Length: 309
Image 1 (cartoon, rainbow, N blue to C red):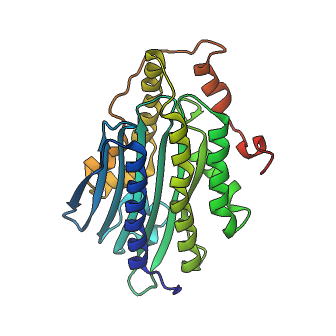
Image 2: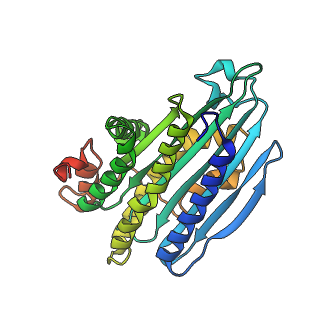
C-alpha cells in the first residue's frame, strides 16, 4: 500500500463494505429488503442510502455510503484544525443504524470514515475515524461480552493499547451529559486517526468496519425470536428517546452533515420510527428495566466478565 493517501482505494472498500453488510442483514431479516436511494449533492459529491423498513426483524434501519467534497470545510471539521479552514476537502464513509422491532434485540450503530484536505502548497492531510456501539433495552451479559470481544479482536493486530483507548473514547463520547448516563454499553470510537502510515491506518479502519457485522449479527439472531410484552415494547420506545436526544444534541456526524449541506433524509435516517417521552418516568426497583441502568449502563469491563478470554 502506498504511503500516499489513496482515496480511491478507501472509496472502493467502503462501497464493498456497504454491500456486504446489506447482504448479511437482508438474510437476517428474511422478509424485507433494502431499498436503494442514490443522491447527488449540489455542492459536490453524493451517496447511496440503503434503507429497510417494517421488516420481520428490523423496524427501521439504514446503511449509508456518502462521498462529499467542497472548497471550504464546515466549522465542525476545523474546530481543532483552523489552518485547514480554506482547504479543499473530501469526506467519505459508511454509517449505519439498526432498530429492531423486538425490545430484546438491541439497537446498533456503526460508522467508518475518511477525511482528506489539501491545503495550498502543502501535502494532503488525512485522518480516519469510526467505531461501533450497542444500545440494549434489555441486557444480556453474553451479548455484551461477545460485542466487546469482537471489538478487541479488531484492534489487537494494531497494538494492545488501541482497544482500551477506543473503548474509553466510546464510553466518553456516547454519553448524555444532561441525563448523566451512557447511551449504551459502548464499543469502539476513534477519530482524527493518523499515525503517518496511511497503509496501516487504512488497514485499521477496514478491520473495524469489517468486524461490525461479526459483532452484531449473532446478537440479533439470538434475540429476535424471544417473546416480549406490550409493557416491554413501551419501555423500548421510551428508551429510544435517549437515542434521539444524543443524535440531535451531541453527535458530531449529524452536526457535520447538516453544516456541510448534506442530505437531510440520510443524515436523520438514524432516528427510530416510533419513540416516546414520559415525564419523570422511573423503573421499579429490582426490575429488568431498572437493571438496564443500574447494571448494564455503567462503567464496566465486559471482558473481565469473560476472564479476559
